[in-house]
Image (cartoon, rainbow, N blue to C red; front, side, top):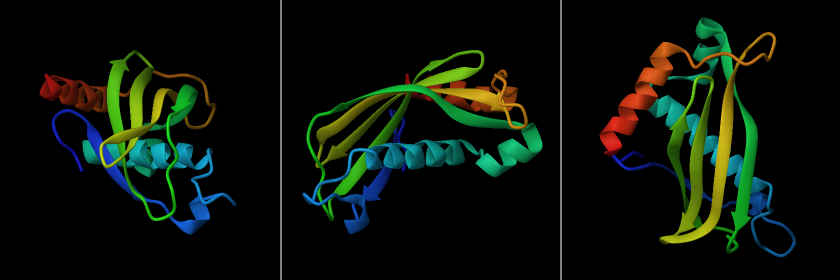
Length: 141
């Protein structure tokens, strides 16, 4: 799902996502955010296998910070928001939040880097991908 402000990906919490206390296990929020980033790239027109095969690049998480505000539970329907905050030469920074019924459960900042698929050395963001990201930024304004 996409509107002009932020990319939103819905996630349903399954039993397998929860711990013995019935809440989402903390590392699973990272999985939910990864799915949203993958779907955000797909919505921009870039499938990750194509990026690797045709462009020779992959996107890796460089660093992240996450604040856990409130737990999610089995069967909750969550929204994972993905908003680009900075587009650099070879990396992007994203604000990612996870919400339930409009309430923020998770607030995260993620820096993702573009690297050569064979060597894992940093590379610049391919021009067509950067152009699509910048165009999305313009549409947000």
